[in-house]
Each structure stands twice: as structure tokens, then as C-alpha cells.
Length: 295
Length: 334
Image (tube, rainbow over all chains, first blue to last red; front, side, top):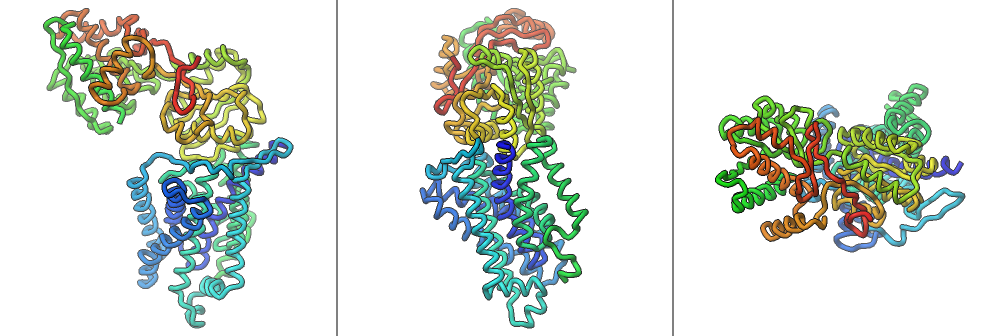
């Protein structure tokens, strides 16, 4: 039992970062119908900005997280300005955006390599967060609780924003139909900016959280999580924010359990395989609507 | 990156050999070429050294993958090669002209295990290694064989992939199995994270962690911090190794280059002297076959890494030094 609960704690910590990352990924998909392959690069830059705040500027973590939030949000908005906006204006096929965002991602990784080097670096130990509780042999670190708290808080704030605010209604209207939105006097361009900002900001925070949790920040950290994020988005249902939250937690737990109870050699094979099985049963994902219903 | 320190050490050795006139009238001339860690370039350089420069011996290449590509050319031409930073299995299997002074994992690890057995009561082990890295996978097999040879039961073997940062699931499983020793087939960055997360999960100091030679890097301490303490690895050499020969080497190197040599530099320095010693015994430089035989006959050569002999398969036989991570650096384990 102890092992089971410890693995659950491990799975939820991992899953929470997947969820925060995937929410932004799925928002851009759900609202703007775009697959943004540079989402992992924002995540990685967020981790480095947070690290620079803590390690180089000596700021507390409570300021590093908002700094990463704002920086990554703006970096993500630059995608809309440089790539997706102009492509939308030219009514280009969305595959072009996918390739262009891959190029953007490569560029940002190369830039990070030049500035920060290719070595793995870590966040300094934060005294307050290094404690832990032990219940019946299961260890839960203060850091894990804080990370989980930040993740839940961000997800809750986003859900509230989408449901209860003007901006949220605008985003949902554009997601429903850009044409209807234009008719209702909603600027698709401004809504796209807002969506990219929120998505990027969340990815940046996810980068800080993952860097803190696993003690590793590197220019390549965005590439692995991009694949996981894609899985979570499909598992949760394309464009579904609650789906990404639940899907993230679920993928974290599935991965940890496949190591814990099957074999570490097949960690990803089992993770992706199970996702496939779930999608066979429910092709639109956990919370997804069918293509027809979304259109 | 690995090459510069070797070039420095070899040039220093050649100058010393020529100044001391240990080879009488024979003067050693070193030709250094940079392959830029590119296989095709290494092959070109080997061809040029053999056919144009007509060298007697080649010291290098710096990376195992380069040696696998270029060494067959030297083998075919009958030019002896001594590598000083290749640790991958199978380098000397390329042929009977291929030697190395860099001991591979299977020579270093048994020494580490023997030390751990003497110091701690070890009966049960767990292994954790990178399954998609050739060097780490071969390290895993070497560790496994050594553990079996010592009669230590391996409770479980866990794996990870390159780029993984979360080892908590594997470590939770290992913790539950309750081994006395955990053997890591992991590079420095991964080893550091594993050590850090293991301590976070409450795997106590009573569990000993043993690592691969490739885990030796200052990076380990930057990433793991105090969690690295007690981590044991094997090496052929360390800068503080107290033999008079080594101390003289380190002092001369620091004086000449302004910084301490690394392990590859030390192994390259010995390689240069092994060649000089072989040439001295042969007494002439126009017979590569005789030089090869003399190198192969090297027994109990006293180098900066200690006594070195070549085995029948041209692998270095050295006494492995067991190093322990302690307070931010590797120190000899006692």
C-alpha cells in the first residue's frame, strides 16, 4: 500500500506539470484550430527565465513564477505576430503554421543553447520548500504540494476566466466560430493575442514547476514535453481545457504506474498504448466533442 | 573537448623525452591534427598520417566512435595505435595493432564493487541504467556480470531513457525492494538527478550507490549537491594520486599550462612514454612490427596512473582507484 500511495504522489506531481503545459496547448488548438509546435520552446524559456530570476537576480520564487508567466506569455504572443497572424490573413493551410512553428521552436532552442549552454542546470534549493511530510512511509514534499497547489490554482483561475469574464466569452465565441465572433463584433485578432498569451504564460509556469520538481533545466526539455502534451491534448479531447487537466494527471499516473507495476523499459510504450486503448473506446477523448459537434 | 588535454600532455611528454635523450639520437616528432570529432575527417587524418607523414605510431583518436571508423585503416597498414580516452567495449578488438591506456568499465567496476563489499555488508542489489545509450547499456551488462561474480543477488533492474528527468517511479520501486546497493549505468547529469531524487524519496545513507566511470564530472556536484556524498566510482587516475611520478607530472603540467591535467591527459602522457619505452627497447624507428611487439610486451610500466601492463587483448591492466564523492569533489575512498 505504501508503494501504491507513493507512486500516486509521484504520478500526480508529474501529471500536474503535464496538465499545466497541455492546457495552453489545447486552448490554442480549441480556439484557433492551430497545432503550435513551438509550445515546448516557451515552456523551456519559462524555465530559464524563472531560473535567471532566482539564481542570477536573487529574487524569491514567488516573483520568479510571475516573471516566467509574463515573459512566456509575451514570447507566445510573438508567435501569433510572426507566424500565425500573417498566415491567417493569407488564409494559408494550417499545416504551414505547423511547419513554421517547428522552425520557430528550433530557433528558440538554438538561441537557448547559445545563451545558456547545452548542460543541464538546476534551481538552487529553496529552504522553505525542501521539507516534507511522511505519513505511513509515504513521503510528500512541501514542493510537491506547492506545485500541485499552483497548478490547481492556475487551472481554476483559467476555468473562471473562460466561463465568467468578457474575455473568456470572447475566447469561447471565437472557438465556436470565428465568423460568428466577427459578426458579434469580437476581434479575432485580439482574442488570438489573449489566447496565445494565456497559453504561453501557463507553459512558462509549467517549465518553472518541472525545473523545480525534477532538478533539471536544459534547452531540450521542451521537446519531450511537447510529445507528452500532444498526447494529453488528444487524450483529454482536442480543445477541451478540463480534458487537458484530467488528461495530464492521468498520463502522469499511467506513466508512473507502468514503471511501478509493469516495466520501466516500456514506460512510454505503455503510456501511449493505454492512451490508444482509451481513444479506441472514446475516439473524441475524455471530454472532447466530435469534429461535427465542434464545427 | 577531450582532445586538448591529451595534446598538451603528449607534447609535454615528447619534449621531456627529447630533452632527456632517453632514446639516444632518436628524436620524437609529434604531429597533432584536429578531427573536429568528425568521422570522415578522422579517417582522412589517419590516411594522411600513415601515407604522407609516415608516422610510426598514432595516439588517438579522442572519441570511441571515431576510433571505430579510423582504426581499421591503421590496422590494415600495420601502424600501432594507442587511444587514451576511448572506454567503449570492443576498441582493441579492431585488431592486434590497437591498444589503449584508458581502462574500460569492465576493468574499473570490479574494483569499486570489491571496495564496497569490504566496507559495507552487501547482499542485495538494484540496477538502474539508460537503456538507449550504448555506453550505458554495456556498462549495465558489465555491472550485472560483476555482481553475479560476487554472488550478490540483483533484486531488480530498472531503466530510463535519455532526457528523462523523473526517476521517482523507478526509485520508489527500488526503495520498496530494499537493496543494500544501487548500481547506476548513467552519465553524470542523470546520476546526479537519480542521487538527488533517491534521497528525496527517503532512500537512506545505508543504501550505497555505485556509478559508472562516465559519471565522473564536476557537473555531478552542481546538480546533486550534498546528495552526491558517498557515491562511489572507479577511475584509473586522479590528480592527487600520491605517487612521486604523478605529483611531478601534475606540477609540471600546471607550470606549463596553468591548470591541472584531466584523466585523459594523464592516460595520454603514459601512452607517449609507453611508445618511447618500446622504441628504446627496439632501438630503431623503421620497423613498425617490432615497435608493435614491444608495445604489446609492456609489463609493469610505471606511469602517472600507476603500474600498467597490456593484456593479451591489448587492454590496460591497471589498479583501479576507487573514488568517493565527498563535499563537492571526488576523493580517494578509504
